[in-house]
Length: 103
Image 1 (tube, rainbow, N blue to C red):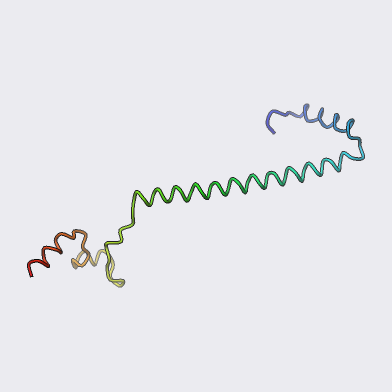
Image 2 (cartoon, rainbow, N blue to C red; image 1 turned 90 degrees about the horizontal axis):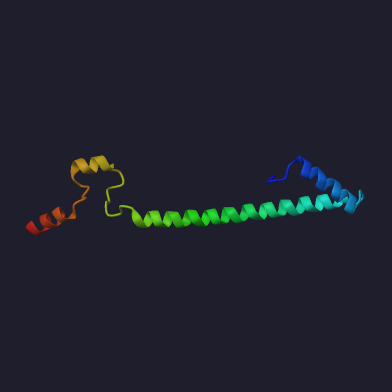
């Protein structure tokens, strides 16, 4: 509750009872509760929107630093280790260019 202790809260309740009166105090307390709940919900919504935006920005930065390897294309039924053993997975493109030129 921040810096408010039990005695301060009790003093505020007694002061509110004297100023507002016993008939209107429950109504005002309910209204204050609804306002507090609405404000808390709006704050949580704002925080979650900011978090989503920050996550998107972070993901964009990570993807920009580490692009996905799309140049390595294999047959869909062949695993990467099988392709490496067969020599069909080419990571060095200069060797394939030299083999084409020698033919």
